[in-house]
Length: 445
Ligand SMILES: [Cu+2]
Image 1: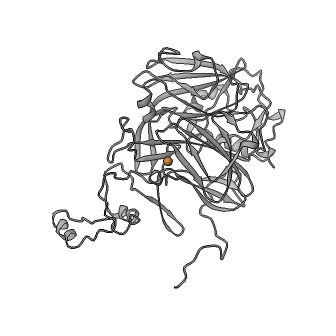
Image 2: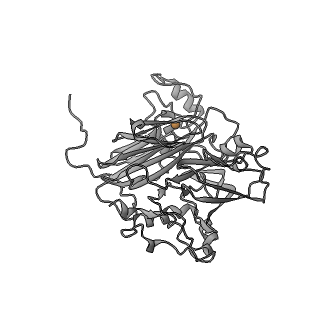
Image 3: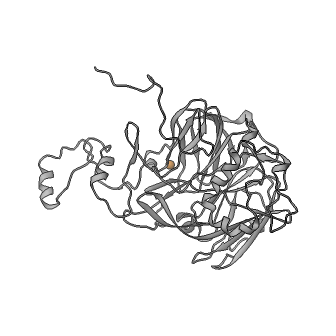
């Protein structure tokens, strides 16, 4: 069963080099493309599935390695295609302004790569020679640092120190051999504070040439980030240092995040990367997992830690693995509770336990429609959002409606959907059908 869902390294880049530009434009959809190969019932790692290495620039990209792997799925982002040129895997990144819809009702003017923030996930195999062509279509110079990757100093991407910055309109080539495996990242090292605050980052995943540990059936990647987007505005504020109000998984906030869909019994890996300003303790419901990897690669089995919450520090990555042996809808979220809210108004007075009395009617004479909120808790905020118009381009603090009512969440929050039967393309199966007698119920007294 495992091998049926694994593919030959490189088979993911199935389109020819002639389709290069189309592929770049379609990066956001590349995930499904990869996924189709990964889930094809008859995609064994056989030589027949490999593109012809002699095909040249006009043909399908060949591969160099023999390793097979389960392709990574980066929900709501996708994977960067590559072409093989003279034994080198060549990738193309374009640094550019990006308008990103974090969830319906919030469109943000960001910077990113290839039309996305985070940028598309780069996927390669230990031992690969890679060439990364980086074009700057931003209004200011940039560079790329390959975060956590072992490489010659001249390829490390710190502008001014390791290289001249990449000026607007210029393209730079980075080329090195991958000497490690694991979950790594990329981000600018020029005007770094601003460029990262507005979304410039991505994941760089290197599969081991010799498989480490049991093979996984599903391999997900999630980049964590946080933003200061003042209500009614469209641009992240890079000057904010601590008081962020939007928290994203792969550039999406709940309910805009796509669910992670797996079949009951599958072995699942989820990789997290964090280039935000805070640590995010990521908690999974329903399962205990093993933390199997850090930004320095796989953790040897005897040192792996069993947890239900993995702290992902700033500048770090973590990989977790578990067997999804219990079907259901299970949430995956940051456990800093403000990080699962959307655009909270910070600095508001605390009205919990406050009796509003006749004052509310007095205020309503001046402000028609005024209501004091939060005296009995903040759960009413989600319903209020439906009939109180907030500022333009601003999300209500909490959102999401499930089969039993309001979910009252936002931000870094998504749902792992474990089902006995899943579609070939792992489409969202809808809400879980609870077996009779398995749902908590009200009792009298
Ligand atoms: Cu968090």
